[in-house]
Length: 291
View 1 (cartoon, rainbow, N blue to C red):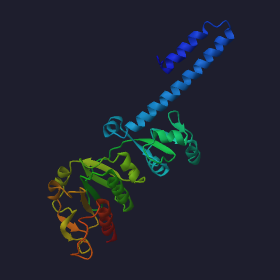
View 2 (view 1 turned 120 degrees about the vertical axis):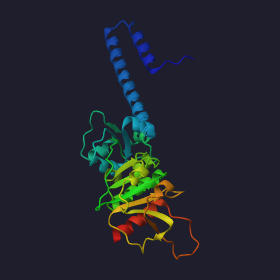
View 3 (view 1 turned 30 degrees about the vertical axis):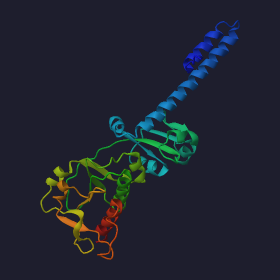
């Protein structure tokens, strides 16, 4: 059986009406066809938007388009305090709750429609498309504490670390080029909105560290480091956290001049081999800020 496309079916239907004897019938048929075309176009746009949003799950597409997606009232609201969204897709209730009127390119959808577009298992009222921004690489000073990530791979860990940095007032995160992409949807969600307040910069870590003064404090966590609770910690400098499985790489480790360790308890007792990198980051940042 030959299957017409929707557009062909509309054209075919209208042609049949041309043989109608009544002008009134012809006008009614034309009007009906216009409604069908309009509905078809709306559905086509919806499918294109769904495809576009889902394509932003891919890093290459995000880089090419210069944008990323965020989902949920908390994450979207925090981002909107700092950046104008390129597009919003949200339920009518979300617009009402936030006293917003949808713009021309924004979408108003039902919960069911949102589920079809969302990348989350349980969508939360709104999806926002935001521009990717790039902050300049800072020149370390004697007043600022920086966090540096060397090869962190898991987007969930990455997002949690950004949230931890935000909590402890660390506003700049320096990442090696092989560190997980901050704009990965899983990472964005894990930040719980902190992505809006922490600048994340990707660079050649070795080259950046090589340009620092020899006596600038560069801390790194190692299994053979000094007990962090007994070590003198400065109020400024760089804290480097390494890869989940391999720790800090050799090329980066050679620039660490202050090796620290989070000891297990009691010392000498058989325990887990290591801590999750996000948990280790939280403990380390907390100890620095406690001093």
